[in-house]
Length: 303
Image 1: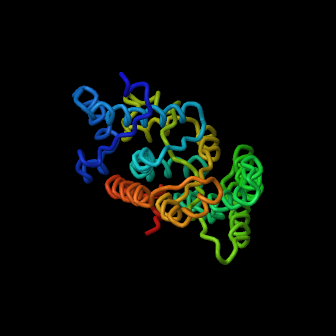
Image 2 (image 1 turned 90 degrees about the vertical axis):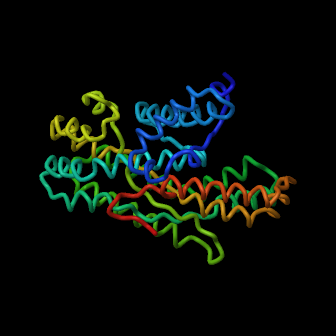
Image 3 (image 1 turned 135 degrees about the horizontal axis):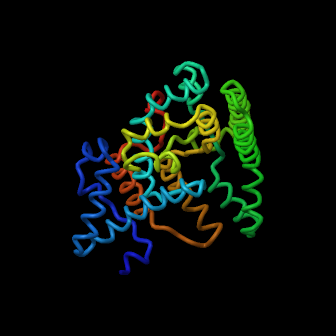
């Protein structure tokens, strides 16, 4: 019962063959979660409940329309699930969207290209401000100020997408965001270790569409359930999908090793480099097993 109430985070990468996991992550992770919970042996229930929580958090965030920001051990599983959905339904869904907009599938793919994101090293900036001024609130405010351009640009894009009705208008809004992202990149100092990532829009299971399918997790039938909706509904859904900024977490973990002295000077706290190395090693192991460190459209992947 403790596992049900506590924040356990388990790992299945040592229990599941990577090829099986990546071929059908929904079925594989779901079956392993139930098996582990039912097995009721030492450690097994913690793993099972942990992955059950990932499913619950993922679907709850979709129903409520709020961002899901997983912890580092949930992140690879969540990204694998959402990428599996994209890869499975992408071609069929893009065809449905193209028909709804009376355009080509190529234009829809073009609309999905992720935009590169480069941010200042937030943790280093926060710790440096805290070390200098000793005020946590002021350090947070300074960090928010530095990221104001990005927040406003993302909000402007989302607002535009909610009010537009054509792919051309949405593409123009994306170009404006891309220009803002380039401006952010130019603001970086020559010695800044930039946080690298992407900005794109999420392609996930819509709760209202999933209800129309016989099995809400039957990804193969999802596209057909989507196609049953009117064209104006499909156009609105496509444009209003949430904008998502995703950072490459593995590079962020590597950057942490540079901050040990800065952390001590700012807070008086000291971390053991061996613990950080172990965290980095474990995370890379999980990422290697689940797939990759960042979710991108199938037609455009970084190496």
